[in-house]
Image 1 (spheres, helix red, strand yellow):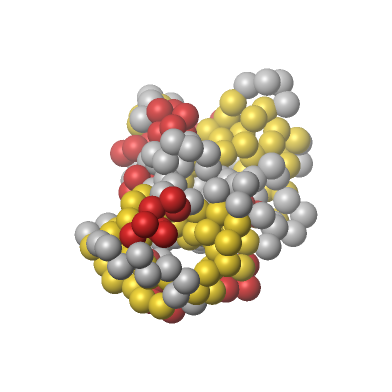
Image 2 (spheres, one colour):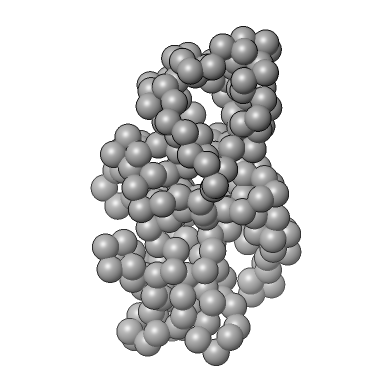
Length: 231
């Protein structure tokens, strides 16, 4: 999926790249802020369990922010949209990119926007404190099942992006998460950057198997709207 420290993010402030947060606060397209665009005809799209330190076989579901109490519990910031998934979490992995440990989750409770987890292997605050800022990963087969038309962010990053005329535009470099809708950040072939709202008017085909995304640019959408008005 997609992230790097520090653990600051835009969408419900889940852990993500600081540059993403900074960029998302200054988005303007055709004179209107994407932060206030209406959420209509949203392309089905699963953003959970899909940040940057994922591997092909494992997905990130949270980040440990601190210990909780003295009995080995940890406080976790979720990076999944489905916090209920922690209720059935069993086998998972603690990883900081250099070290990865398999653990078994034995209990789960919720505290405001955080999740409190307990691992079978640790019963003391002194044993668990070193895992601050570690990612919690799950095997891909244990991820939240995708509904028809949904996909994980990590499966579209670095995808080739084409317009509706099959002209190559660039590479999908990042995904911004805003209150209105998510936004694809496309690194254009000419070195520029293109922001595409992830709604059906703009994103009409996502092929995760071949890492290929088809979009309509703002010019194309505006041209189509003008044609409809003329008719």
